[in-house]
Image (cartoon, rainbow, N blue to C red; front, side, top):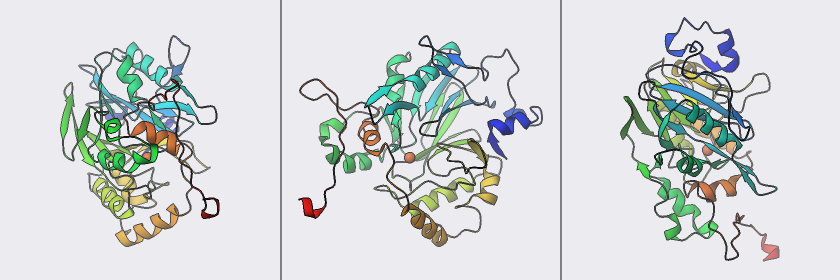
Length: 338
Ligand SMILES: [Fe+2]
């Protein structure tokens, strides 16, 4: 089973109670939530279960962001929130975050943590914005191997060790658990795309970030520093060894031309159909096809702005002496120009 907005329109809401739509006028539906600035956010769907899941799609970077809440206590988490950034003008805006913030506030959700699956290289995280504007200063969390990513990238952007210290509130290890309300989340270390990469297992749902993508897309690239296809194969194998009915909620979707954006599929679907990781594909085959594909991929459009913000937990670069904030783009020069 693959979940998309179109799927759900065809879906019998009473055949799978854990996935049915809430009847109106229940606590939170799929209407648009309008912020006082006039910005709207609309969850793609409302998945029920021990924790309720609200996916939000950000179209510019094709990112899936998730609000996950315990329906009783209304405590919850936000996973992989996006900060809007225009690299041509340098303008940072908060339309996406404003809308989700309005959704959270109107529903009375108490967000306890902002969960990063990894240091993204394709979009800026809005974690500091949520931390600032949500009550109780939710904790900004990431995997402990962010230290490796920071060590690699800090000198590239001219950051000191002090710039790297104490940016994240929580550094998770594999297997750690925490609760929001009565809901337990277990952290899974899923390296390969990046070394710090985590999945968050909540009930039968795993928020997989950029490890697997939808079955017809396959997997994420594994050519970033500290990433590698062998680790990614092991991480995907770990995910696909979960029970058939567990659902993988992806961090992005880059759909082929014949379909719209989707965001979740069962382990059974992936085992049968995942383009890169389905049952029967050996480690050797996976590495070969992943590395061949990665050789064709260009650097992400927001690579440098994303990393210099995301390795500092979403903090914008420190202002220069004149008070202005600038992004740094390291330049690579051919030997003939040195
Ligand atoms: Fe990523």
